[in-house]
Amino acid sequence: MSLLLVTKPFAPPWHDSSSGLARALVQGLLELDSAPALRVMVGATPSGFRGLTEERLYSDGGSFAPGLRQNLPVLMRLFRNRGETARHFFFAPNRRTAKAARLAASLRDIPSVHTLCSLPAAGIAVAPSLFATRSVAVSPWAQKRLADEGADVACIEPAVLPLQSSEEGRHNCREKYADYVLFAGDLRRNGGVHQAIAALAYLPDSLRLVIAARDKTADDAQRRNVLAQQIAESPHAARIDLLGRIDWIGDLVGGAKAQLLPATDLTGKMDYPLVLIEGFAAGVPAVVASEAPMASVEHAALGTAPAADARALATELERVLAVPPVRCLELYKSRFSAKRLAADYLALYRDLGLF
Image 1 (tube, one colour):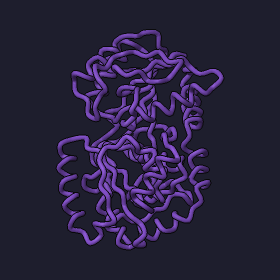
Image 2 (cartoon, rainbow, N blue to C red):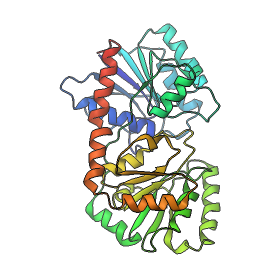
Image 3 (cartoon, rainbow, N blue to C red):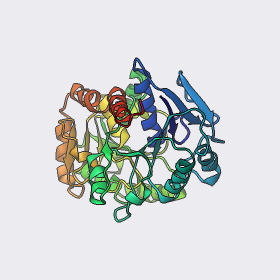
Image 4 (tube, rainbow, N blue to C red):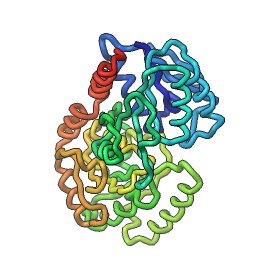
């Protein structure tokens, strides 16, 4: 079996969740005794993996919302076959890309798998954007949404590789921010940041809140400015730090007492925020909104509470603070490791007769 992974640039710094998910799959597959031959799409920066065939299709490092200039070489590549016997797509479902993929499939009859890395807003049908031989949701919540539309899709939960971190880096974060809870999410409405700030009022004064959110668009920059002003006017301003894009997220996650991400709208986001799973791998527990897809993951290391109930969020946060790091690592290894991800997809490939 020769498998082509269709992703955004498959290369560091792995900021995009879809290519990050593909990265975890590649790592898991390469650890198998009989891994399939893998082809990946890169830009100027190589993937850093050995044993892959890299196709340079992207003109630069990519973006969070790539335009036609970036995507055209990828779409043209789908009309060719360079020896792959199957294709695995990693992106959010959309009708335009589905139309192009269907056209390519009509010319090149190649079996395919499509991992639906995120879903559109509620009320927008997903089924018309399905095109692959087998579509895969990343959470039971997404699988049910597709089932409600009459679409039968598999469910394979995501996985991550542990973040790069060092004892010195984690120590530096603790020195700078003391005992802190980390919000590493989105600043848009219903992204959870305001709920996290509200919960801080019910937490011990010894705990701080560190907000880490990178700007992807001009709207994000505007949201950051508004939030910074709101924080400055908050009675808890002295306990809040607002960060932008950083290159030491592994240390920031690993140094946190816990993560708090009470988002209720994950449109365009992975159903399970990968940073929370990366936290489990670092021994850091988390709390999410009970309305979020990840609330279905039942484990002591993951607390849930209604997003609008600041006191309940704080109570759950204090509970998970007592969870030993080994329990978080247990959750990561049993449910979100690259080895598990590779085993699940390999079983799917075999069911389809690809391997």
